[in-house]
Amino acid sequence: MWNIILGLMGLLVGGVINVLADDLPERGGISRPRCPYCQTPYPLTGWLALSRRLFHQGKCPTCHKPAHWRGLAVELSTVLLFALLPFFITHTVTLFVTAFFIAVLLLIIVIDLEHRLILHVVTFPVTGLALLSTFINPDNNFLVAITGAIAGFIIFYLFYWLGMKMFGEGALGFGDVTLAMTMGAMLGLHRILFALVIGIVLGGLISALLLLTRRSSSRSYLPYGQYLAVGGIIMLIWGNQILDWYIGPAGQ
Image (tube, rainbow, N blue to C red):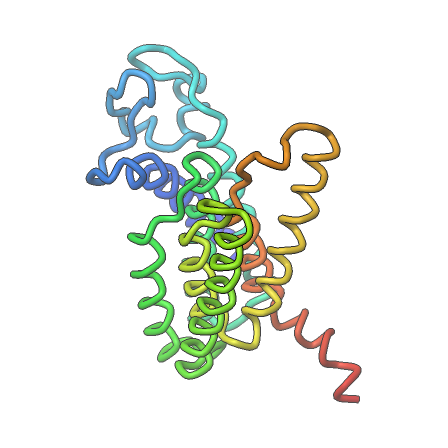
């Protein structure tokens, strides 16, 4: 039952992520879902990318241009992730807190991919919410969370500083630093280090693949926040199992 409920919530949350991904980078207010081409607000049946496929053949009812694939991809990804959560998280409060954190990280991934931005208006408030959530979430506690936030900030600030010294401005964005801080608050010190390692390794592998296939060059800008966020999602869902696997042999 929880899988169905969370899956339906994921569909609605995916729609919200799409709206925020469109509006937040423009530094404007949050508006109704609208066509990216003619800027006409969608009718209620077009608020979700899935409903646009069902009722409007995936096109804007006004200008009839096809909707971007991103909307449907985000909604389906959120549905899938949310529907899977009850298989791995049994505590109700932790379940919903984790779903919220995953939604934030998906929003960060979309904005970073499309605009090469990690917005402080997202990371700073969510860091505060993550710290406050420790008072109701048994999967984390305040001391571990704030230590994780500090560790994430310091580790990636050092990378940010080294990048500027070695490669100049823009080698690593300060948004990556605040994202590491936010993830540290979400995950706590016991999981943030794993998340950062996963993100760094994933980013390195994909960057190497793009270089080998000549889809980018050594001078190309590659958004890094998306890989960190994926590492965060992995640790939010499977972090405890990964920790048990890692420390199990030492404890036996």
